[in-house]
Image (spheres, rainbow, N blue to C red):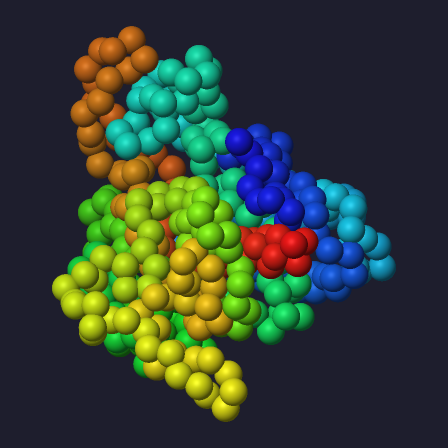
Length: 354
């Protein structure tokens, strides 16, 4: 299952320390003008070494398109692309070749396949998300023509949480801080916490909030193809994601009379006074903003000694080496946006196919 989507469909390939990572996009409409600067910038937002609170690895992550593009536009045929891997320190993982790292995919991959690439996690590495960011950038360009806009931001790191709704923030401020948080004061607190955790060789998790504006009424299927289920599947496929909620989600300390979204006639357009539903009702978009939250666990690789076992079941102690993120959230923001864009474009095309 290395493919995602129904009509707009991404198949990704590659390992962290292999020759390259890349993908094939099938079902992309023809005639989409590809802004290469925009696509590369989406990759730049994901890549390491972009700020003092991310891993210091330096990777250019320059995308090369192999097919499906002519004169700067999509042709409707499969889009093949690749990003060559550079600046790899595979020797950092030599000591882990026969070790099951705590909370990594080492144990499960070894037992499922009988073989695994121990260098940087191989296929389970977050480097695979490069393919998602390329496909997501193309999906964004297509959605821009439909006036559908997707914005994600860091809303929580550890115990530091934004306490206002997304509508009360200037989302244009997100890129002004390395942690990608629209509240400048909270962003500074988050950065300080990440630096404190990193100085101890530890890691920390948090939450990313995503807002999708301009989605038309009718995207999503009524039973097994619900739009929020597709978005949940997209988000839970991202490395280190542990939870997904849309609308009011787990904020259940209310009565129905308090959270029902009341309809009204707004100049011959049906609207709602509130949006507790998160833009989706009955699994189908209702025309309001879609908003959801994605919880990320602390990165599993910590630069501290830990107990574990080797592949023979022998008790050992390990300490990871290498260049790793203390908090994945700043680099995960564009990945959340990418998977949201892929999902929304896919479901838009499904709706058109009807």
